[in-house]
Length: 391
Image (cartoon, rainbow, N blue to C red; front, side, top):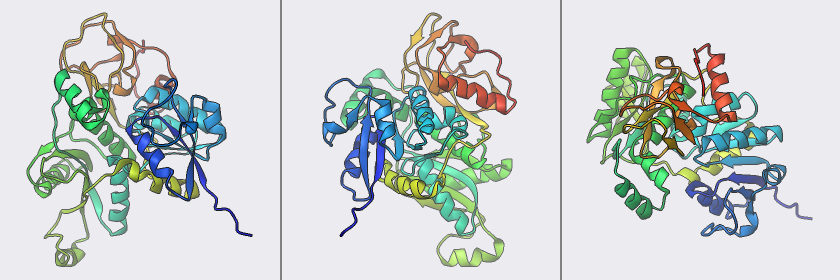
C-alpha cells in the first residue's frame, strides 16, 4: 500500500503581494500545502490566486491547523500579536516582515521559534553570509542595493507608481523614501552584531557595484567596524552584496579565481526573489529549527521615526511606514533611547509640533498600548537602556 506523502501545513498571515504569491507557489508544491490564510478583510478576497476556502478570519482556526506560520502583513503591531499567539499554540513562525523583527523580534524570539525568511534582502544576506563564512571570508560590509531613493516623494508620484507596480500606496512610498531599506539594514546589523557608520547610513552613490562596495569597506576598515549599509546604483543588480577579507596566504588563490588583489573581496547575489524563496526557509526551519536570521538578543540599532515635514500639534497619524508625514531611519538606540520606532507609528496623536528632519520621541506623541509597545520597552529595559516616558 502506497504511503501518502506528508505535507507541511503552512498557514499564511496576510493577503498582500507576498502572501498571495506564496499561496500560489505553495499550491503547486507536493511537500507542503496551505492550511489557511488569515486576513482582516471582510467577504470575498479578489485576485487571491487560490480558492476562497483557504481564507479565514479566525486566528484559532489557522493556528490549530498549521505546522508553521508565515507572517507578512506590513503591520508590526498586528504581526507581533499574531506571532505571540502562534507561540502559545507551539507553532513555529517564519516572517518576511523586517518591520516586525526590528520592533519586537528580539522579545518574540525569547518566546518561541522565529526566523526571517530568505527572499528579501536581510534573508538573502544571511544566506550569502553563511556561504562566505564557509569559504573562510571574514565579513566587513553587509550591503543592500538600492536603484533609486527620494526621501520625500510627492503624493501624486506615489499614487502613480503604486498603480503601475501593483503595490499599495504605503508599500511603494516605503520603498521610495528608504524606510524599508533602513529597517532591513537595522535588522542585518542586529542579527550579525554589526554597526552602522552613522544615522541614516552612508548610502554610497555609484555607477559601479564594486567601487561602491569597496568604498564602504574602506570606511568600515577606517572606523574599525563591520558595517551594515547600502549603495545607490541604477546599474547594479537588484540583490545584495558582502565585502569581506581573507587570509593573506590564500590571496594568490583568490586572484586566480578572478577575485582581485584584495585585501577586500566582493561577493554578491544578483537577485532577491521574495516569496519564491520562502519555501527554502520553511523546509529548513521546519526540519531543523535553525534560525536563518533574526533581530538578535541584544539589538543596538533601531529604525527611528523622522519627520518629513512639519507636523502640527493635534495631528493624528494613522500609519507611519509609507506615509507622507514620516519615514524610518536606521539609528543607534543609544543615540536617542526615547525615539519612537517607525513600526509603532500607528494611530498616534501628536502632543507637540515637530520639524522636518526631527527624530520623533515618545515625549512628542500619545500612543495606544499594544503588545508591540510592551515588547519594545522590555527589550530596552533588558539592555539597560534609559526609557524615559511613554504616552
